[in-house]
Length: 280
Ligand code: C2E
Ligand code: MG
Ligand code: MG
Ligand code: MG
Image (cartoon, rainbow, N blue to C red; front, side, top):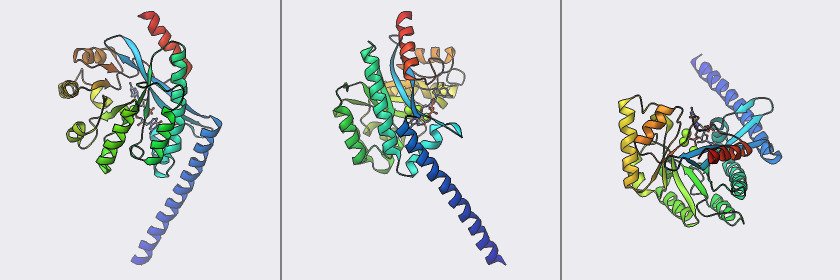
């Protein structure tokens, strides 16, 4: 009786796993198709430099409006692509679009860099490295115009390879930003080891920093520490003016969040850049 229950329990699980895998594989097929037919979009979220009051950069964020399921969060399909070895083509797609769009912004007179999120699985991958080398050989590639946003987990599995890859990216003129700072595991030791240009404080610390003393201390001390390490600091998830005022007073270099702008299409981003220039 018990054995049968155990067996049937396993069987039900097995069926579920199988159905789940089927769904994932068909979604992946549709993701490939979306990349081929251009349904997959890239949205850009502005980063505002507090010293100059100018938008200096934009983060590229992938967007997929599924014909049946509607808009899907990258937090769902990016991990899916990672699990099934499809993250490299997805990232190559975003990188290609981001570089082409940034070249257009420059052609319209806006000197703005573009940031692309690089999965920790890709940082030290030789295949991805080749795609990056090819990207830097584009006619429209400008040193300093491209930022890679990486997370601490990139360094966890194989620190030596990660450090080596990041050094190589920087030698090609790509800047490196540590994303979601404060949510990782081994923050301090990796901060010393990783070759970085920028540190992005995760929005969970940023959003209440002007209201909660504990978050305020964390954000202020992170900014001071980063500056001593010669890193620029970006605060993500800035949604209101009091939060921005707190960050400005704390010496934060750059802010990003709904207050400045939500992720938007390339044309809307150019319009936003023009507005800001007129306002300045
Ligand atoms: P992330 O890189 O930390 O990006 C920031 C996320 O916070 C974005 O969500 C952005 O829309 C959201 N956000 C920005 N400002 C605010 C704000 O003021 N308030 C709130 N509540 N949220 C804000 P999104 O676009 O859904 O992306 C989620 C994550 O998916 C990203 O986190 C990134 O890790 C990943 N992702 C997105 N695009 C790509 C991609 O092309 N490649 C890879 N590997 N990952 C990507
Ligand atoms: Mg990011
Ligand atoms: Mg982030
Ligand atoms: Mg995040």
